[in-house]
Image: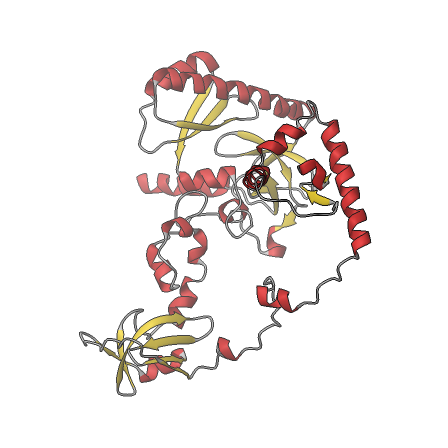
Length: 414
């Protein structure tokens, strides 16, 4: 009897599981990717607002494309249905929920601060009929929010759910730009998070700098997983970086390997050899515990290129353009400008002196005489005149002399 009842239950559950002939891609507000929902009709087109059933309840989203046949395109069978096309009442409730979510977020933040809980509230989401609200928060450890649920239930009067997420989930929800200049992979297309380890960076021969290897979330970047299998295949059978190998009867240390250019660098006290990874894999013999000879002072190493890559010294360099200033020797060799005649020079001196006099007259106070008396050159001239007062003065002619922009005669200097 019990066996027949179990069979009847299985038949009922199989009959109740609906089979949807059409699939509709629906994108929710602030969602990174669309989700598939089932439909019995193909009357849903791109851009239509639809009400769907989710795990949280009734929600509304926009159709990303027309309804597609599951059998024709071999799509994954959706498990949640499209309830109906959105009505004007649904659209009005959807717009009102934005205001109610902001108010609920403020209330929850106040209660968290009053209770002193160590949690960072990120978002609040109402269902379409406002029968349930979901609070998403970030925390380092588990939080006892039982007292918080009591306070929120008394103020919001609906079902309340609190969901804790990690740093990666936060980056997926908030979004951001990675160091590659593109939107974060978790926000753009990733459905689940892969396990990322530091060994993936070692396989790609990257510098083990956690700051450069970390993404916006502070964890190791998801893109380290993308090429990990390729690097494992390319580096299979190669010695480790920094290990000692014997190549053509000499002991070398592997100082560099570049998988992309298919080149490895071996170095000892006398030689530096560049060879292909295939030669390193086949001809180099690993040696451990060998004491290598140290380089002598002033000894230059011999560089040998045995790889297909052209050395940088032999590459055609672009033309060099000198940006250096000319030296003093070059300045002396340049032809000097011809000096002006005496008449033109005197005229220029007179003009410059008249300009200086006018400038001094325009200055307030007109303390030109006091300034000139305080200058060191004038003081030296006065001392020389006092010493030569006793000596007989030779006959001189009136000569115009330019001193500090002024035109003076010898009679004024007496």
